[in-house]
Amino acid sequence: MPGRPTASRRTVLRGAALTPVAGLGLAACGPGGGGAAAPATPTAPVALGAESEIPKGGAKLYRDQNVVVSRGANGELKAFSTICTHAGCPINKLQGTTLVCPCHGSEFDAVTGKVVRSPATEALHELPVRAEGGKVVAGPGA
Ligand code: FES
Image (cartoon, rainbow, N blue to C red):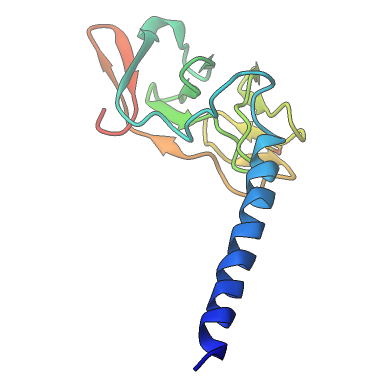
């Protein structure tokens, strides 16, 4: 059957042609000149800083680790990945307890992780967090 190999080759080529388009979409929103794309979340527990830096009802943004840690009124710590759920930009601004994405202006509540301003529609990814020896440690397995 001479027709079959041609058809399947065409399918493969079409698939390959689409790949760079998807790649461009991500690159357009990456950190400006930052080199490698930031991971969506820490992949292992990371030590962030002193637990005492996070007041009740407050939050602290750890830009290098792409993590925000907040403390609720009950004293409980919560951590979220600060990779924007809209198109993957690292969020670099914290105003009070509101995270502001530099790419398209989405805003998130650092205490709940929820979206407070579109275009994002999905809450930030929550991370396990604990305090150890006065330091905050967050990430999968923390
Ligand atoms: S990536 Fe679009 S608002 Fe954050």
